Image (tube, rainbow, N blue to C red; front, top):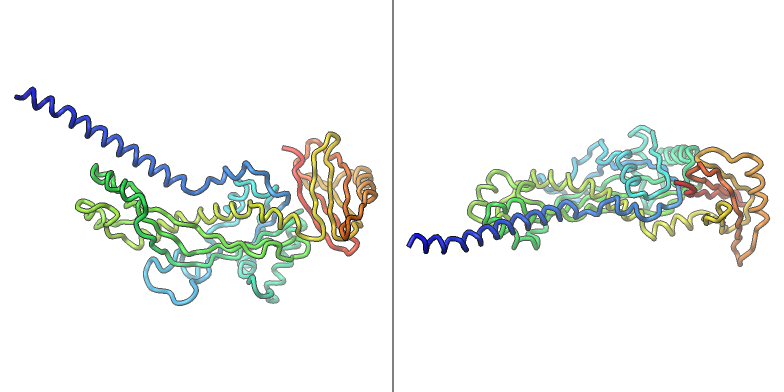
Amino acid sequence: MSERLHQLRRPVRGTVRRLAGASWVVCGLLLTGCVTGVEDLSSLADRPPLQCAVWITGGAFVQPVRGEVADGPLARTYASGSNTEVVSLDALRGALQLGKVFNATRVDPASSLVRRVLSELAPDSPPGASQQAALEAALDRARRAGCDFVLVAEGIQDGGVVSRGINDRWPFTIGAWLFALGALVPDRTYESQARLRVSIRDAHSGMRVFQQVVVRPGPVDLDMFDRCGVWGFVQSILVPPFFTSTKDSKVAASVRAASTPRLLTSLVRRLKSVEVEELLQRAGPAAISAVAVRDGLRLEIDAEEALSAIELRVDGAVLPADVARAFERALLASERRDGARFRYAAIVRPPTSGRLLRVQVQTEGARVRSATLTIGS
C-alpha cells in the first residue's frame, strides 16, 4: 500500500516542480520586460547624429498644474511651484550624448535664475523685455561657443498621476500568486500627465526652427512593492495582488521615479527623428552638407542668396589662412544658379587629426548659417 502511495506521489511532485519552475521563468520574463520596456538610449546611437553643435539652456523647472487641482498625492507628479529643476541640464546633455543626437552639445553655465527666465518663453506670444534680453545673451554665448542651434528646455507642465487599471499581465499574476510570487508581477498601469516642453532656435537669428517638442513619459507598470502598503500585502494573502488596495503616496513616488528618465528617453527619440533632421537642415538661408571623397570632403551648399563669405574651423581652430582662402575662392567660383537657388561645391582638406568641421557661411544679405560636420572618429 505504501509503495502504491509512493508511486502516486511521484507525478504530483514532478508537476508541482514544473509549475514552480515555470512560475519563476514567467516572473523572470515579466521583470525583464518591465526593465527594458523603455527604449535603451544606446540603441538610438546606431543612427548617424544630426550635423550640428547645440547649446542647451532653459531648464526643466516645474510649472503648476493647469485648472482646478484635486487634493491628494496623485494630484501632481512633481512638487507644485518648485524652484528646483526636475532634470538638470547636465543630465539632459548626458541623454543627448548617449543617444548621439547631435555632433556636439554644450551646457549654458548661466545661473538657474537666468535660465528659469528662458524656460518660461511662451510658444504663442513674443518674449517680454527681460526674456528677450536673456535670450539674446544666451544666443551670444552659443555663437561664441561655436554652436549652430540653441535647445531651450521650456519647463515641465506638471500633471496628476492617472490609473489605467489592471493591465494584460493579470493571468500571469494569478499563476504566480499561487506560488506566493504574485507581488513581483507589474500588473497595474499608471501614467503621469506631466509634459516636458523643448524648442530649438537658430543660434544666429534666434528664430524658432522647431516650434515646440512636447514629450510625455508614457505608461508605467507597477508591481505590489511599487504601489502597496502593508495592508495591500495582507490582502494579497486572500485575493490576487491586482485586487489589493494601493497606497497613493507610494504610487506617486514610483511613477515619479520612473517618469523622469522616461521624459529624457522620449525627448531623445523625438529629436533624433527624420522630421527634426529635415527641419534643421532647411533652417536659415542655406543648407550645408558634406560628402567624403578621396581627396577630402566635398562641401555642398544650397543657398537662397549668393554667398559673400565662408569660415571653416576644425575642432574650434581656424584653418591656416592660405588653405582657407584657397577653399573660399574655389567655393565662390563654383556658383551655379538653379532657378531661384544658388548652389556651390568645393573640396576641402581638413587635418586628418580633426574630428569636427564647423562651416559658417554668410550671404550677400548678411544672413548667417552654420553647420558642424563629422570629419573623423
